[in-house]
Length: 215
Image 1 (cartoon, rainbow, N blue to C red):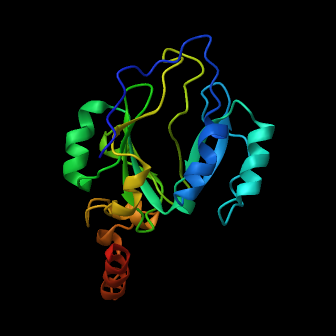
Image 2 (cartoon, rainbow, N blue to C red; image 1 turned 180 degrees about the vertical axis):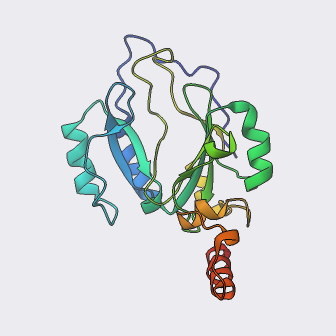
Image 3 (spheres, helix red, strand yellow; image 1 turned 90 degrees about the vertical axis):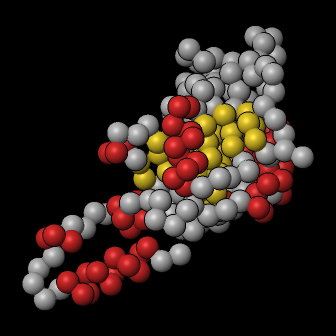
């Protein structure tokens, strides 16, 4: 049965949480790639991620838990084979579900945002803010904070990331993004204007574009 959001998502002042220590091994068992997070916003990786090409071992996760006992926990989306639609404005959630498709796994952020989870089809991380939408796509090269992490400072201090619908058991049932829901810039990493394609290159340019849209 899908797990519903808890009635309270604020951690008391005297309560000491160790999100990474608590959750890392379980996340690893679910096929995800957890990393410890810190910093003022609780979102800054404590380990180098740019050169990571595979998931860390359980022994490495235990070592990180000892090094960073109070760290938040995040996951590297690309190495976890998932794509997350990161929505800052909760009012946009219905429109984004219509655009990208329904998903059984949705996570709430301390500020009231929502993360929609999908199976990866190798989408690149990108932003929809050029469409005037407070939405980011976390795919290859991306990272998201996950439960039971807590916002350490600011107006949302003490508020937790929490499951709104579903839980990690839903990962095998995640759909992919609805075909065509991302722009060409999001799927290819660059913008190509067909209006600027030179004479004699139309067919090849169009063919390359279509290859990038194929699921």
